[in-house]
Length: 145
Length: 372
Image: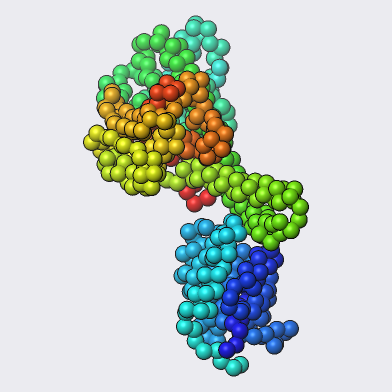
């Protein structure tokens, strides 16, 4: 079985590192790809420019506050593109605002998770997210592109 | 003193001014005979008082009130009139006139002017303090916003990474390093809690106040359900009479009960804890009481316990940030009530708060914009 590919879109390298670190500690194997803004995320997903060899992610972990193109726009782009729409998108952000949560789900986010403020919770959230979306959940088969 | 007379009768102008001057006013006057003249004059000049004839050939002196309102000006208007029915007089006052003086009783005019000017000054002072209050509330809310969005983020980095350090390097550096890392983690987590508590406090002010006819007995039950674990663990016995239906925001009232009862549980003494909740109507308000037989509060601290982040004990004795009673105070005051504590150290405390019997809470008090 292929190792699941995660695309993490986050401009906070501390969160990318911590998430990768937590996933590296878990029993299952994951491959974390990281980009730090919304434009890069879309290029990655569409395999444009330097991303022409990029893998098709099984899960997108998306922050909302991003430079150049914000998370909601990225989400909209993904869900409007038939080739990408079936990839589950987990919003992973610090915002607790009800408006952000509602808007994300309205735009087709598959799940909304708040980044916890301490390590034990952070570990629990990231591990359950990976376990659920890349373990228990049945996902569409990856196509060759 | 600058007076604007709305009058077409020169003799009447003269009489009014004479009455004022005799009373010691140094009055200089402009005269407006039409609506246009009046509008131009009030736009250009600032008057201490406007004396308006009730009936003029071209327009109604009462219209001067409309003009002032439309121009957003607050200038006292006293109606001068030959004869005025009682009903019309009442109507004039309702429309915003400060007073009316009959032309054959001009001796009354100086006192009426003095009072109108005094009232205007009071109105201005009142408005200024309200503005100041609203501004300081906005500042606090702005601070809370900054705290939530800009402080929490770096704080999260400090907390998670010092925790990661502790996890990975515990026992691999020297003993001091372990201790220092522990202090750093502890400090970061405590600061997070403070920031969250501050947010909870400021949220009370940002939320609208949803005043409804509310069964406070059911609200108390809800608070007790939320506190179930603490009640069981402490073995507290809670007695209460049938509480009344009041005008209140039910979720905020629940928070008040929860914080007061939660405190009674936290600050219990060595005796088995008994908490008594009651309410009685007194005058125009309900007085609610939450009494306990806990450790009590010394009289000199009776006021300061309601101050934000004020604590009377060390964190090792009793945990907490000193936010609960500040939240209670804010909620009760938004409802137009008061809160205080009566206590004898060692013999328990009774927290009392009032809620108005009628709907006269300071709705929207110090509250700027719900969506901001």
